[in-house]
Structure formats: C-alpha cells, structure tokens
Length: 509
Image (tube, rainbow, N blue to C red):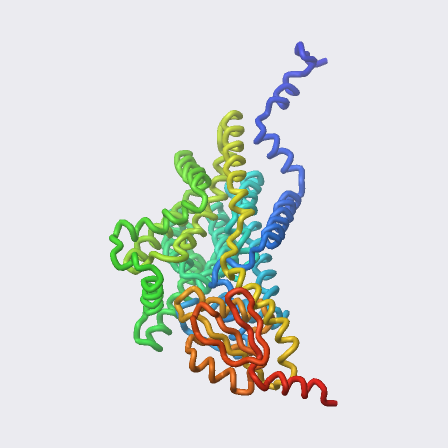
C-alpha cells in the first residue's frame, strides 16, 4: 500500500496534478493525431477568411488584380517574358485559370490553399524546434494574423511566396536538426520556387547558401549534395539577371525600374537620407502589429540566450533582413508596399515565438507568456475584422457590376465587342480601376482603357462599342448616347445608333 498524503493522493499523483499548463497541453497534444489540432487551426483560418470576405474585402491593393490579369493574359499566349515582376505567380495563375476559367474566383481559391500550406509548414518548423505545442502556436498566430488572412483571399503574390519559402526553410530546419537528402530536397525545391515569385527570395538564397555550406563544413557533413542544394536556389536569380543583361543591356534594370516607379509614387524618395532608407522597411513592418513584433523580438533574444541548436534558422531570417535592408537603401525604396518587404521575416518569427514559450522554465512564465500572446492576438482582432476596402472603391465596384449587366444585354449582336473606358492618366490611382473592371465584370477581355479623350470619343463611334464608360473625374465631355446611366462617378452610355442595331439584331429570326 502506497504512502498517502493528507489529501488522499500519492506523491506521484500529486506531482502530476501540479504540472504546468504547458506540460499538460503538450501531453494532451501528444495523445492526439498530429493532424487533429492542425486541422482545427486550418478550419479556423478558413472561417476567418469567409468573415473577411463578408465584410467587403475584395483586394489588398491594385497589385492583386494586376497579377491576376497578367496570369490571364499569359494563358492566352504562354511565353517566356522578362520584366520587372517575376514570373512564378503569373505561370501559376495562368495554369489555374486554364483549369477553371474564373478570374474572380480561381486566384482566390489558389491563394487560400497556398496559405493553408504556409500554416502547415510553420507548424512543422515549430514542431522541429520544440514539439507540437510550439508548432501549434506558430500556426495559430499565422491563422489570425490579418495580412495572412487578407492575402489568402486576394490575388497578391505573398501566399505563393510564403508557401514556398516556409517549405524551403522547413527543409533547412530539418537538415540542421540532422536530416538528410529529403530535407535538402525540400530546402532547395521550396526556396528555388520562392525565388521565381518575389525578389525577397533572392536574399534568402544569398544568405542560406553560404550558411548551409559553413554549417556542413563545421559539422563534417559537407558533401556534393549539400553544395548542389546550396547553389540551386541561386540558379533562377542568375538566369533572370543574365536575361536582363542580354535583352536590355542592364543586368539589374529591374531594380532601377522599380526605384523609378517608387520615386514617381512618393516624392519623399528625392530627399530621403540613408537613415530613413535603412529604417523604412523595419519600421513599416513593425507598425503592422507592434506588440506582436515586440514579442517576436523577445523570443529571438531568449532563444539566442538559451543557445538553442536551431540558431542557424534565426541567423538566416535575420541575415536576410539585414542584407535586404542594406541593398534596398541604395535605391528609392519609400512608398506604397514598404510594409510587405519584411513581412516574410515577421511570419517566420512565429515558430521562434512558439518555441520560446515552450522553452520557458517555470509555470508562472508559461502562464504569463501565454496570456501576453493571447492579449496581443486579441488586440489584432479589430484590425483583422476591418480589412482594406478602398481598392476597388465603392464607385468602381458598382460600375463594374453594372457593366456586367450591360454586357449581358448589349454585347450579343457584336462579334468583336470593344468597350472604351476613359480613366485618369496613370500612375494616378484612378487608372487602377481598369483592373477591377476586368475582374469584377467577369469579362477580362473586350475592354479598351485610355486617358486620351479624343481616342475615347473615336472608339465610341467605331461600331464595335456595345457601350462606353466615362470617369467623370476626368472632366471630359460625354459622347452622344442613345441611353446613359450614372453609377457613382462613372457614366455608362450606349452609342447613338448602336441601340437600333441591337434591337434589330435581337428581333431578327
């Protein structure tokens, strides 16, 4: 008979009763299938995306719709094309639209699925560091992080980039933990694909390759397969630079053109000093969620203090950020989108935060850390539920929807319709309405957008226009119309004589 305490418990039973909450959660998770808690996180994420869509979110900014249109146009004529934007997402959207021809729905479904891949990869990274609880915390933070949720139902490039990047860094983390060829294949494949989507991937490849070789040499694991894996993610950047050099005579012309665009969009670039250029990306990214950024920074410091064996992951994420900031400071880097260039680094810190919480040594610290994270995530809820709805604006949404109705009524008699639209000149924000009209009308073709009033007037009488659309903020006179309708700042009109042709065509046998 065992020794009894005054509470009627054995000492062993009493010891189990006072285990820390973190230990209890870890034990509970260990008894569940690995996929069960992750499935719950994924379902919660999908629910949040539905809520965001119900609250009027269509797109983060014009980049999303532009990328969808690029994918659609590439599908009409698949080709190798060198430009400022990298081609990875264009190819993916083109293939997806070939499978399901809906420019409004298909890209959002693709990005939703890619975001779920990111959640799984973050979970696996956290689990590699400190077990399932750390992975669950990492995936849970990402699932309710506003920018992950918003981008998951947009046309932005981040979901594809983050999915491939996190898979690549999962391979890196597993190799550092003693993995072999499969881990290297995952690293090389994921990171290589990431370099075809966003230029940030190039900086990860530039830091990860030498770091991987140094770690392999230090641990006596340097083999040809390691060297090949380290070099593979650098192949596409090298090809892209070579193509720019061959076609345009300027190997880094894409960087110069991007800087010119930013200079045109933000006059502050002309007088910004070096300090401002060096701090703009970290400052704008931290401003997205300051308290969460502070927790992530504290987690990084604590992990380094604990001398965790997965410190190379921290070195890679931090080294990439430092290299990106230093290089971009040499160009005009202020302006729209500055908050997105270090967004991947922010997200890659979530597994570090999850692992740091698990590694805390005492029960009160587990409780305090968990409560602090819960409070921070709760504070993000109002941001999440107030998604950006300024693009496309209310007038553009209404006019595009009305255009879809008019297309159903007026384009049938015309074998080759062309709808002229007069918009403010680019790079004015008003010209970005062109992408929204093509997406929201479900007619990516059949439009001709111009800022030239004379060309617009000529097109309205070409015989190909079932109707025309005029942005009245251009202060241009409306063409003669048999019928017109005002929708917000837009005026829709049927050209004179066109209505009679349509009526005759509709009544003919």
